[in-house]
Image 1: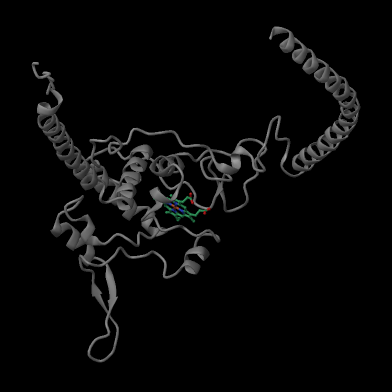
Image 2: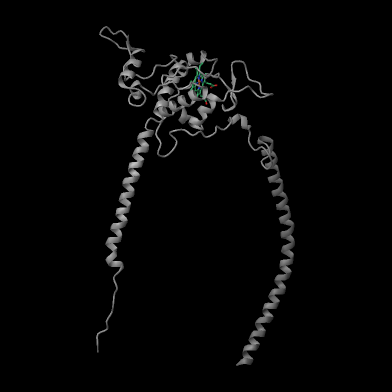
Length: 315
Ligand code: HEC
């Protein structure tokens, strides 16, 4: 038995050896072919990637070292710092006296150039002003209404349902009044700009002399927070520009803070309500979650603590 097995094994060995020898020769040959082919492939690949890199660098700058962007940091504008707004926290509401002061700054300063199309007089009621105050302010503005019985348009004093008046009749008039730059509508400005309220505050308080080497065209002003650095709006806030009725000293930063709080409210008037509802929902839902965990434990208690015992029948 063992003799037959060993012959068989030897036979296998011999066959395996000859196969090995044969494939060694083949391998040596194809390895040479592969080596020469792979070096050609490697060369082609290096040429293609080197070329791509050179082309990309020529267009956009070196992607491996230094600047990758086509623009410089100044083109994006300086990044505004994060300011500690009163309404920032999860449990915080707007500072409503700041909204009231901010409205005053908007009305006395910004409204000569900027519209606030999406805010109506009635929106101020209960937020920053009383009904009587809002009505009185609305009535000071003339609105066109009509047509009347004769088909004529007529002027009438404003009502609570009227929207804030615009400083210019149209965008063209606004541009021609501002050296070609269009003062944007401010209703949603803290939503429309990267950085939001922080950006608008930084912009209003960020006017400085241009650094050496930076040329600002006639009619434009230097502000590092504005993308590109040259803005059509000049610095508008100066210490003591408005007189607050509550006696708050009207410094530049105070007015900027107040008007930005007002604009943040205009962009997001539902903020206080939203946070309150969020809190209510969180409290109710966590109560329900606790209740459902308790119910589940209660219902499963009998099943989970059950013990099955098998008593074989006695013989
Ligand atoms: C004399 C007219 C004038 C007054 C007053 C004025 N602005 Fe402007 N504002 C402009 C113009 C013009 C632009 C457009 C600038 C540009 O695009 O270069 C502008 C742009 C802006 C922008 C947009 C900047 C951006 O990122 O596009 C904001 C925000 C702004 N003003 C806020 C205010 C606030 C707040 C006030 C009041 C405190 C105010 N402005 C007062 C003329 C004015």
